[in-house]
Amino acid sequence: MNIRIGNGYDIHQLVPGRPLILGGVTIPHDRGLLGHSDADVLTHAIMDAMLGALSLGDIGLYFPPTDPQWAGADSLKLLEQVNQLILTEGWQIGNLDTVVVAERPKLKPHIEAMRLALSTVLKIESNQIGVKATTNEKLGPTGREEGIAAYAVALLICHP
Ligand code: MG
Image (tube, rainbow, N blue to C red; front, side, top):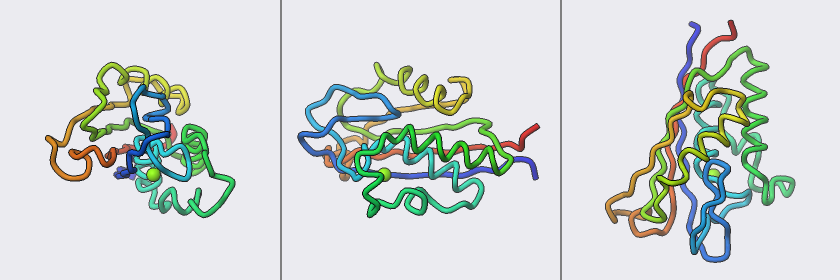
């Protein structure tokens, strides 16, 4: 078969004193996401979708949170490594589609910057990456602004 599909999900806690980084873009906000790396929840969901498409495990396997070398890591650099892995395996991205679930801040003004940052690292066109944002209608942990979650789907195609 020459196409594969994968999905990814991630959530991180919102805390004071951390930058908010989504899709490689630093977004002005009074809080940021807590995590061992830069806690870029969107980029993490994308990596898991890409790895999942090839049944290659998850990001915890490649970048364990217990490993000090990933402390404060720029998730775009990790994404670059995951992309290199799928290319080496003979696959490339057909398209990605993603959803970020955040009550605040408003993400719409930053969506194009995220698509550009991600597509630049992945060396694909920005029209191969969908980034959508939604609130959780004040319901649950994301709705109470305790965290931000992200979902991603990756379609991979065989190298021509
Ligand atoms: Mg994560």
